[in-house]
Length: 325
Image (tube, rainbow, N blue to C red; front, top):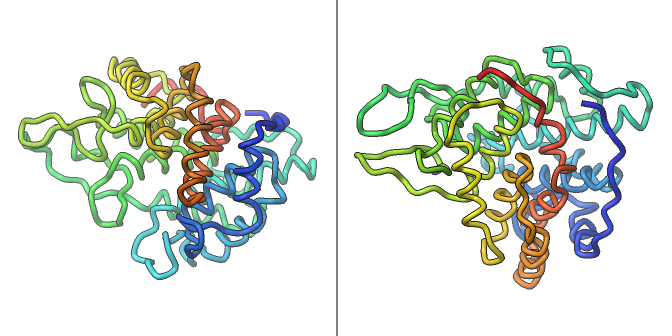
């Protein structure tokens, strides 16, 4: 996918949000220690807005936090898990593409899917090759299929904690990261896509990790549904649950939706060209509520990414067509 010039975002609240995110690594809330997920998302928001220089501190922090096996722990004191690794991969991959463009080393950064893509993008202190190898080796634990639950327990995606079962959100993030580094056709990516589809509810939307428990269909939630649809963008899947999931989001997003769910829901819709007309107003309203509360960097970054719409890096670098899963 060719790297096109990043549009300059002029909406005033977005400028203010980006200024709050710029310069220093981020914690989940203001005044909290820096953590991998908010720092990676803030870097993505800044890079998506063309503020590459403002994202450098975040990228250096992620590089310093990278373990020798390539993974990234959520917090410095919580090293048994590495679920933010795909977010860090995505931020580093977008930064590497921007650097290649600025240096004119590779004017066309449309990278075909091949294992060598990762090393081609590896121009930052963050070691993309190590991180991608770690992600490809990380796997959820399969379970025997049972009438007690509705999903295919044999499909392998990604867990929150290694050694446990696969969940919808870490699998969606891993699929997005692998697509961003040119691994769309890797068997792990394809199986991750199959898992995301398998976990969609028959009536649309998805829960966090299951579909049916003891005969009862679980309720859908906006956040995992938006993230799953974001990861499934560009996949040519003939399954009514995709359209029902889009409808679920359209019917359940409003100005009253909480900011994180609103952001993921709108990103999922934008990835499928289904943005609600009032979406921009809802995001701006959520921004003002967030600033009045505590200006949490994680929330601000997600709101900015949602406001970027189709130009958001999460959509721009992952929505190529795929015909088989």
